[in-house]
Image (cartoon, rainbow, N blue to C red; front, side):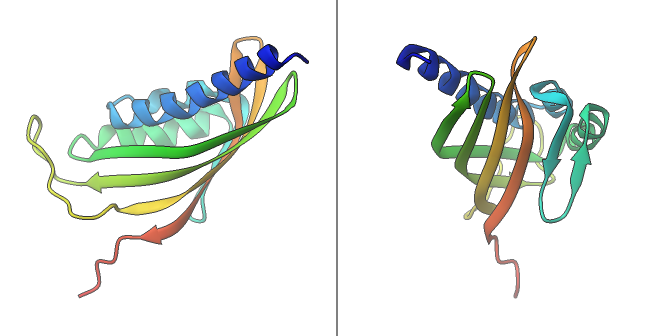
Length: 146
């Protein structure tokens, strides 16, 4: 594989990471399933969604929560090309999330709701690069204890 081919794979995977955040934060969370393979998996310590229909259903519930404002800030993205058809990735995310936000008004928060890691496995499909597996892990959670 040439260096240019490797860079193209890395960029395609980075674009998936960005598209994921933009879809959720932009009110189109149900479309997140389109970024996964048909048998793709999304998981966290609290939930696991196997396959496109389960992922679509889970993220449709997020999309239906119109009063939730969120911003996923993904940084320190590292993509490792395994082969011409597979790659792995890791990035940090900072999630700002507030419920009950009035449309067109800014949300008020002083801290992120969560800071964590995404561990990804990407595969090349006939439709381009997709997530085969995405695992979200929390490293820090907002402290709401009084």
